Amino acid sequence: MYKILSVALISVVMLSSCAEKTGMPEFSVFNMSVRNEAVQVHYEGLIDDVSIVKLDNSAGAPVIGIIEDAYESENAYYIVSSETVYEYAKDGSFVRRIGAKGRGPGEYLNPRGIGVSGGRLYVFDYNTQNILTYGEDGSFIGSSSKSALMNSGIYITSFFFSGGDMILYASSNSPVQDMLRWDAATDGLTAVSERSREMMPEEVMMGENYIFGDRDNPFIYNNFNDTVYVLEGGRPVPAMLMRLGKYRFEYGDLTFDGLMSLSAGRLNFLWIAAAGENILIAYSVVNLGDESSAFLGLYNTRTGEYSQNVEITGIPEDFAAITPTERLFEGLQDDELLSVRPVSDTGEEYVIIKYRFK
Image (cartoon, rainbow, N blue to C red; front, side, top):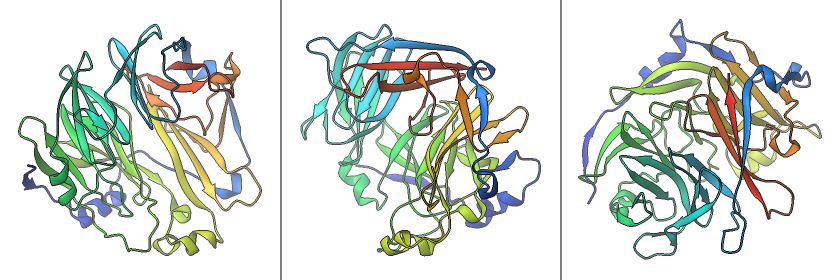
């Protein structure tokens, strides 16, 4: 059974005061007045190399479907679809399915997150709130006490690793969100932070967490708080400010009727990824009329320069284009991002595209 061992509460005062801290990198994500001023950047100015791995589509290989997550280890690629977890060798050959859809031992209903640590593969099942553990050979080792976690009152969204610890996190419409450290050996939980605001029953959830950057110590961000954090000593520490200003959703917007009657633009993130000295921010702005509302922002952590609407041009293969609607995942190296996508609209052939950034 899960045990809450201790609570390291992070006060709202501490977190909100981070916006007043000086010396942190900061930028505003969107400005309506310059939304149509796209900046074209040739990919060779950002990216040193683009490599493509064709995934096995021979008889017996899977049809991948909707991509929930992708992870690269030293020896393999793992792809999480809405149905199953797949393992591919580095040359794209199909190795195995990890677990299967179902309710039995080693099975899951809705896999969302994946990670590798200490020679073990961890898969998070969103529907059952269960963490399943597998060996490197795909064999099932064990799972967490899912019922105890569900009874804790915190509905986990997914997980990430920080300093070798597995951090479970929940998404909510709150400036500060729930994070728990899970000890696989004892099945124990330690609270890292607690949500500072309870959602109202009628609210639509818009407070997704975005985990990006260094695999072992990533950035943590949600769109109800300008401050981007990292974990140091098991506590969130401010790292930079990503300001949304008047384009942040207000709590009064978060009902179905409120969302349907928006009279001003609200910013909604699609994905965020970091590689090398670059942070890519894919987002849309709700209620921009008939105009295209999906944008790709680019922030350079070395120079502090930010462009809110970037078009990356010149990538040799059309299907390898970097766009706001094609999610990128962090690769094995800090300067690499991955994309898993079909080559054509038929969805019969998938590739892994690896971008090595400057």
